[in-house]
Each structure stands twice: as structure tokens, then as C-alpha cells.
Amino acid sequence: MEFSFDRLDIVRLLTQSSRSIYGITDQTEAAAWSHFQDQFDNLEKHTQWGIDVLEKFIKFVKERTEIELSYAKQLRNLSKKYQPKKNSKEEEEYRYTSTRAFLATLNEMNDYAGQHEVISENMTSLITGELTRYVQELKQERKSHFHDGRKAQQHIETCWKQLEASKRRFERDCKEADRAQQYFEKMDADINVTKADVEKARQQAQLRHQMAEDSKAEYSSTLQKFNSEQHDHYYTHIPNIFQKIQEMEERRIVRIGESMKTFAEVDRQVIPIIGKCLDEITKAAESIDHKNDSQLVIEAFKSGFEPPGDIDFEDFTQPMKRTVSESSLSNSRGDGKSELKFGGKSKGKLWPFIKKNKGAGPEDFSHLPPEQRRKKLQQKVDELNKDIQKEMDQRDALTKMKDVYIKNPQMGDAASVDHRLAELGQNIEKLRLEAQKFEGWLAEVEGRLPMRNEQARRQSGLYEAQNTSAVNSCAQDRESPDGSYTEEQSQETEMKVPATDFDDEFDDEEPLPTIGTCKALYTFEGQNEGTISVAEGEMLYVIEEDKGDGWTRIRRNEDEEGYVPTSYVEVYLDKNAKDVYKSLQKISE
Image (cartoon, rainbow, N blue to C red):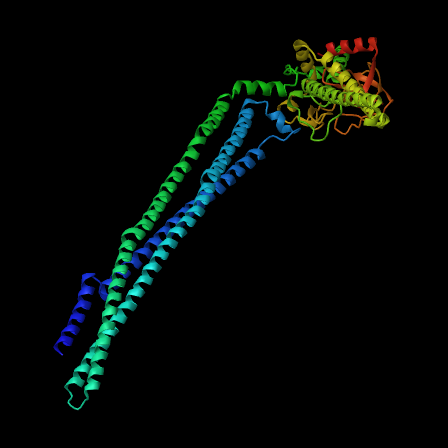
């Protein structure tokens, strides 16, 4: 009895001592697992947050590249919008240094836009593309590490479950042995129980004690194995896994730092090129020459006319200085008629203040001042010569092709180009005739441009005298044949002579004498004031020859006279009449 009791006490003591020796209690075990599980989850969340940060940076760089591309596109569109259109008036404007500088600025802005495209391309290839691949690799590596961590965790949990089962079995066997011992002691104390029953109870108690000893040995072995596994788990497996995760996380941090440096370096690489673009814009601005531009304006718009001379005073009071003598009165009448004849009805054209006709001008540009007309004709001749050369180049190419076809019939039919060659020949002939026509007009202008002293005399003749009130107050503008304006005497502003016996002589002014005849080479529609319409082949009288302005004054009958372009008529001057006309002009002056 005493032995059995002592044995059970020893079993209990061994069970408690074994659990104390290995430091395993329900509270400490639960705390250890709770600590492990919490750190593992936090570490998993932290690494996922690191990947999210990396993906956020990738998205940021991607949006930056889209902004750079959009900005570059807008800059290119802006540059293209303000580029001069081909074969337009804007191309002529770019001969000025200021507009050429603006064109250089547009070109440099185009290059400037290209550098922003380079930024976008480099960021896409060096940052977005590389980091996207790295993120995929990082996710795979993280998945592998945490898979190993979960596997180690599952293994230690399995060992823990085995330890718990062994412990519960040991505990159960101890309780069964304790109950068997108590039953044996009860049976042994009872005098009514047979000796056989007591022996049976003793054997049962010994069996239960043996089972408890076996369970104890198994539990002790399982406990030692678990502690070894747990030690390896916490001090070997998990630290290795965490070390790999830490290295992975540190590589991620280093990689995002390098990417940020690349982000700045991509911008820094294009700064020198952008600086060159800005330097070129500055250089273009410094090349602007205001004196040169002013000279170009002078060359573009000079008309070839000299400023008009002074207008002579016409004394209309001379016929009114009457005397008692009839001869004096007769002389006064004659002088008055002479003045009115050559001064009163002439027309003065103020060429320096002409206004352009908004409609299409004549083909020979005769509506323009001489210098402008010469430039336009020269430009037209150059254009026609270029067209002729282009057509001739095409004809030469087709001729060579035809020769090849003749030598090598398998390459093509030589007759197939004959029609095109005929068309080109006709085009060339037509262009040559057109060029000859404009060259004739050009030669006419260049041969008729007056010298400086002649122009001064010509302009002074264009401004014939008007009465004092018309000059000082209400000279009326009239449109000239070319769409410009001339100043003519208005009937409302003419000086009226008091009614006398001499009024009839003023009203019966004689027309200008004819100085020759002319034949109309082309039909001319005189739609402007001061012009007269003529038909091709019509014969008319010349009353005032061309004085360098491109117009000839003609008369059809006593009531119809006006100006026509000199190039539209062929003039036959009467030498004697011309001399008389010039003499009369000198007398009137």
C-alpha cells in the first residue's frame, strides 16, 4: 500500500518536473505561438506594402511619360500651326529678319518638343519597363519565402499537436493508474472481498502503472523532439526565411532609390540639348536687323515715281483786266482761251497716293506703278521659266524611257509614251509663248522707266493747275484706271466767272488736238472712272501719249475720250502734230 502510493506520487512529480524542465506550460506555449503568428503576419503585410509603393511609383512615372508625350505633341502642333504655308503670301513675309527669327524659333520649339519625347521614351524603357519586370520577380520571390515560412509553421504546429496528444495520453494513463491504485487499496481493506479479487485488483493497478510509465516515456520523448524542432524553427528555419525576406525588402528599397535617381538623370541628360535650343532662339532674336528689314520694305514697295513738282498758279482773273482798247480786249480773250484750253480741262493724277483696286488687275500688271509692275513681271517670267524647265525635264526623262523601250521591247511599249510626250511638247510651247509675252511687257517697262530728272518733270506735268478754292478746300478724289485715285476738277469747285460777254468763249472750249492714231490690240473694259472701253482691232485717236505711268489718253469721238493701258494699243504718232502739241504745252506752262 505504501509502495503504491509512493509510486503514484513519484509519477505525478515526474510529470510536473518534466514539464517544468522543458519550460512548457499552457500559458508560455500560447504566448510563444501568438508572438510568432503576429510577427509573421505583420512582416507579410509590410512586404506587400513595399510592393504597393513600388507599383505606385511605376504608375507615377507612367503618368509623367504620358504628360511629356502630350506636351511634346502640343508643342509640335503649335509649331506646325504657325509655320508658313507653301506657295502662300506668308512665304514672302519670311524674307524679313524678324520673321526669319520667328521661323527659327518655331523650328527650335519643334526640337524642344523632341527632347520631351526623349524624356518619355527613356523613362518608359529605363524605369517603367525595368521596374515592372522587377515587381513580377519580387512577387514570385516573396511568395516563395512566405510559402517556406508557412510550411515551417505548419510543421511546428504538427509537432505541437503530436506533443499535445502524447501529453493527454500520459495524463489519462496517470489518472487510470491512480484510480486502479485506489480501487486496489479499497479492495485490500475490505475483509469481505476474496483474496482472488484483491489479487486481480492489484494486477490491474500494476498494469495501469506500467501503462502510465510507458506514456510518460513516450511523452518525454515527444517533448524532447518538439523542443528540438521548436528550437530549430525559431533559431534556424524562421531566421533564415526572415533573413531572405529582409534581403528582398532591402533590395526593393535600393531599387526604388536607384529608379528615382534615374528619374532625375533622364531629365538632366536633355538639359544641355534644351539649352542649345534656347541658345539658338536667342541667337535668332539677336540676328534681327531692323535696318535690313526697313530696306526690304523700301525695295518691296517703291513705285519708281518721283515726288510731284510744284503746281503752277493759274491766274483766271487775267481775262477780266479789260481796257478801253479793242486790241487789249482781244488779247485778253485770246489769252483766256489759251489758258482754258490747255489748263482748264487737263487731268492731274496723284500717283504717290494711289489706292489699289481690290479686284483682279490686268494680266500685264499695268495697273501697278512702274517699279512694282517690273517686279511682278520679272517674278512671272521666272515662274514661267521654272515651269518650262520642269516640263523639259519630264520630256527628257520620257525620251530616255522611250529609248530604253526601243532597245529593250520586253520592258515596255515605246508607243505608250508618245501621247504624253506630245502633251509635254504642247505645254512647253504654250509656256514659251506665255513667257515671251511677259518678257515683251518686261522689256517695255524696263526700256520706258524714266531717269530721275525725267520723272521729276513727268510728275510736275501730272499735277496740272486747278483754281485756288479747289486746291485749298474740296479737291475731289476720283478712281484712276488701275483702281487708284486721281484728283480731278469738280464742277462744283470750279471758279465761276461773273456773267459777262465773255462767258460764251469759256463755254466753247476746244478739245485737245490729236497727235496720232492707235489700234487696239486687245479688248479693254474701262470700268473705272477716267477710262474708256475699246474693242480689239478698233482704230482710235491719240490725244495724250504715255508719260511713263503705263496709260495713253485716246478719243473715239468728240464726246468719248479716256485712258487705256499703253500695252493694249499700238500707237502711230503724227510727228508734226506731236511737235505742235509739245509747243502748246510749253506755252501753257
